[in-house]
Length: 162
Image 1 (cartoon, rainbow, N blue to C red):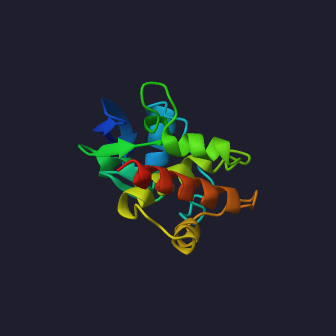
Image 2: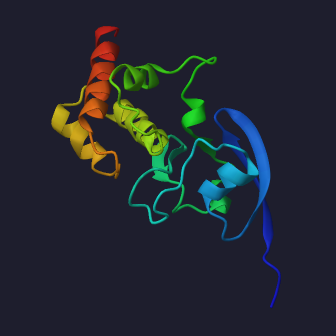
Image 3: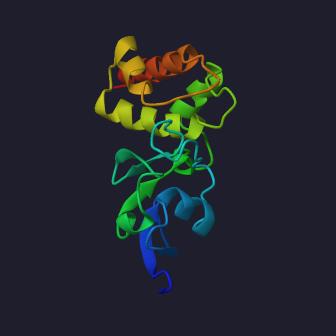
């Protein structure tokens, strides 16, 4: 039996060049948490169903529990830690707090990343579009209404300011 091959992975994590080592089959979620210390990314179901591990890879939301670490070599990865700007929560994070959309917080990081991606693609969503987007997440706290309100609040605010 041969030893597992390790790879040097270089990526841009939340705007900063980072590197670490990963075995061939190491998941991106494990690489982010255990190798790079980006513990904001949580792992829920490990099957890509719950969405708790959602990050953005080259600007597109994806499940880090379904992505191998070696697949992000040379790419840009954004996690919930990258949403804040100069230590201040983003407008989306502030809206989550204002609307009590944080709930227990376990899956919030993944939901925030999906919402951030969604608002870039759909800047003026309807409530149904937001609910459809959120259907890709399973939150055991239930209560998606505050999350929907937070997303719609941010969309309205951003559209008002443009």
